[in-house]
Every structure is written in C-alpha cells, then in structure tokens.
Amino acid sequence: MPLSDHFRFGAHPAHGFVAAATANIPAHLADWFLVREQFEPVPGTPGLYRLTRPEQDGIRRTRQAVHDLRRHGYEVQADYALAPGRSAGPPQPVARNGLMERRNRVAQAAATRSPHQRTVGPAERPSFPAIATVTPPRPPAAATAGGRTR
Image (cartoon, rainbow, N blue to C red; front, side, top):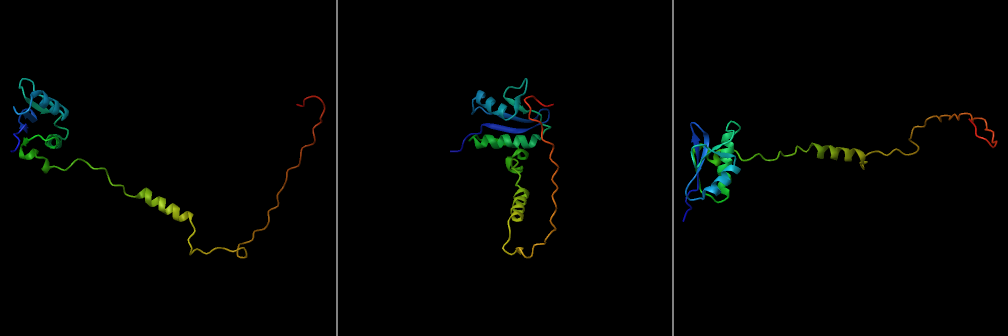
C-alpha cells in the first residue's frame, strides 16, 4: 500500500517557493522538518511555509528539501520544476589534479641515481688546483697575572 503524501511544494506568486504539510503528518513534526530545510511560516496563513532568501539559489534549495524529505521516507508532491531529478546533485569535492603527486614523483626521481647514468670514476674526475689556506696570525699571549684583563 503506498504512503499518503505528507508534504507539497510549489511556487507561489507572492511568497516564492512554498511548502505545506498535509494532515497525514503532525503539525509540530512538519514545522520541525521545514524549518530545518530553511523554510519559515508565512504570517497569517497557518500551515504554509516559504523558503527563506529565495533569491539565493532558491530552486536548487527547494529541490534539495524535496529530496531530503523523500530520503527520510516521506511522500512529497512537488511541481514539475521543483522535482529533484531536474537539478544537478549536491556539489562534489573537486578531484585533485595530481600536481602535488607529480611534483613529488619528479623530486624523488631527481634525487635518485638512475642505473643508466654514467658514474664518474676517480681517474675521470677533473682536478682542481689546491687552494692555499691562509691562517690568521695568533694574537699575542695575554699576561696571566692574578688580575683580570680588560
């Protein structure tokens, strides 16, 4: 036996995107769900809720509310334009482009020696002339009298 409908969604000329609960769901439970789906009660019209800030992606947010309520097991009737199948799903995390992984592989390859690289033996190493090291002169020995020196 199919479930009776619990919610109805549509477009209203004065209130924008609206939702109403049917008698098949308790009013306090319908209010709880709709408020969490970003709908607010319409003053002077009991049981009617309008989407808050409909100018901020209102169609997608209304479709998401329909989808969420259906996922919770409620039967929801919606205008054709508000059916969740007509919109894209929620944004998915962006697939990584692999730039960091590629850089890591390149750095690792640069740090290791390939078996095909030519090794330079001791006879083939270029010889550089020895650089004479100059040692600075030592300061004269300080007097070791019993007092302190300046």
